[in-house]
Image (cartoon, rainbow, N blue to C red; front, side):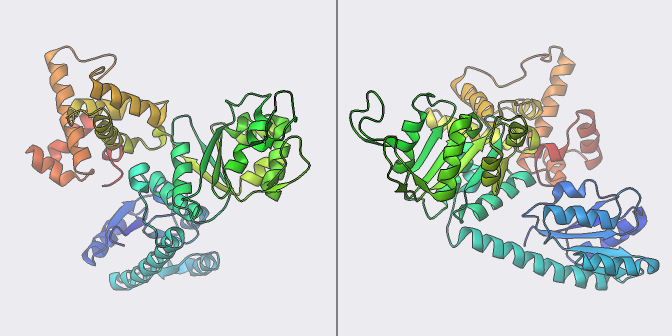
Length: 444
């Protein structure tokens, strides 16, 4: 685990600093926190590290933090640091899943030894998960679903884990977030990759033809049915069926689809014979199906049947740090698609792209990249552009710093060395322009 990290949580600043220094001298990468609130943002299914936390802290204490971490991933090692009077509490915590506890005062060597063992255990867990998920296959998920934020790393891990199985899957996400990309990725890393991938838009099927389209029909099943026809479910046999926006499926049809999910058989319209199906079903939804169930617009039994394996595709607002690099990738793809030379994106444009809201998510961002490549849009600010010399200079300076942060993955030392300024000056300018390295990259 080359990217392994220790998240050290302690409200006592002096102890936190001295412990972090000792662990760094032992070769560990350490990130420190005065409380557990921000720690939870970094924990996920693929988190490659260990959490070390004091038990007694104001607000969220170590026990509560451990419980919340276990809700996110029960196999993240949590090491609790205790005072003499907390040993009984720490023993209780170990029964509830803590990896180990260390009593104060402790030597750095003792803590380092416990952490190394915890790191080895976490490494084996992640390696085992990856081996089970990928099963020796190579994939291109990083290219299809780029992003270095934790939510995207976790999404790719879950796709590999679920994709290797044959489980029916529900994919939830906002419009334009990439739900169909996720569905195709699930199909392509599965054992069904060589078989058909049939995408059905439930919102676009005519109500009077939807059953015929899905199940097929026999001659005479309805006026105009002059020849038998396979439905889309049969066309997908051996492969994957994507039901896009399943929340739009008519309520009466949902009961019939539930039977297909449960029994894996269909009957063509006009026939009493059943046809066995060997398919995997993937459904997508931009609406909250649980709310639709409560409103009586979606069957509860179908929702619970679909909700076994669920993937949540994050919106761009949930992974803003990915936006600059994602935009640059989309610009490169657009240039190749339109046969254009590589486009140099000005730093001020990257800065503006990072600041904007993208309600249309990746689809909207892709359109912006296309317009930039085609020369239809400079990609810069749409309103409130700087007009005075001082404003223009400030906007340019802000763009240069933002671009450098993106280029160096949020690592500050190469940024201030490249720009020829001191670390203090860089901090001051980042504060002045409202630049947060975590907003522009998931690293650092």
